[in-house]
Length: 326
Image (cartoon, rainbow, N blue to C red; front, side):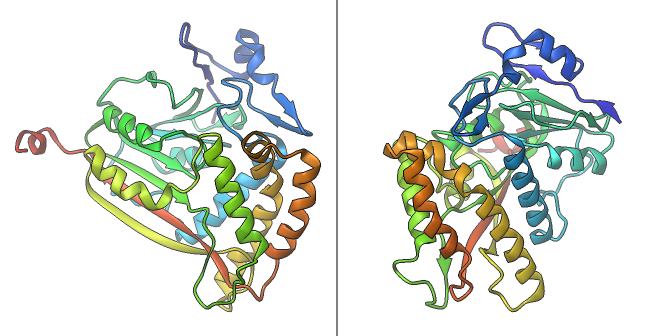
């Protein structure tokens, strides 16, 4: 194991740094998090990401990581990777996926990028984390250089996720793969048990309205396959998983997944609402907290058989020979 490497990305000056200590001395401000409403938010490119980066949010993200790991039957990826040498994880968050990939592919260089330096200090030798904004034109890597680029649960992070797909296409090697594992914010119900006045479903619609108001759309998961194909990817695949919002299912595994999913949603409701509702809808913190009381009760109602859809989409950049034949 080695100390992590963080690199602060700026338009004017970008320099590799060897440890959290040297990063901090080089640019203290990235650790001076923005404080709002009792939560902390990233300082670098402040305001670009509308969700907190504090310990409560890290724990929620880690729980969601474990939920998806079970839902995907232990698969960290669905793209058919063969001896990858360079992998990038966009919006790595707490870095758990990048670290798992570092263990799975010890001869591969894994780079996780994020706006917040919240990843663990000790990581495998082949894993590094970079403080960077994926919205920037320059990802600090060479075009045609990566075997695989991964995104996971980035709804609400970008004005237009198609730009991220286009950049990934640029930086992938011919024949390389991109994959997105994305949470669809819409609440679904197949058996008519969800009432039209369901407060949790209403909250998702209100959140969607707020997200659109600030230019950070949430409903991107069901569009990914089409966007991949429009960007030029071939062999594009899509798998859709159902994830219950609480422990209503009879199946023991899905009951367990629903129980944990209810916990991570319950713990995240405030984080998902504060900045979006304040900036997008003009609500006060007190108004948001009062509103969420009924939303939490609705979330825990096991007579409503609600679920979210998790979309996994992966596609391959054509080889040079395939491009020549077009």
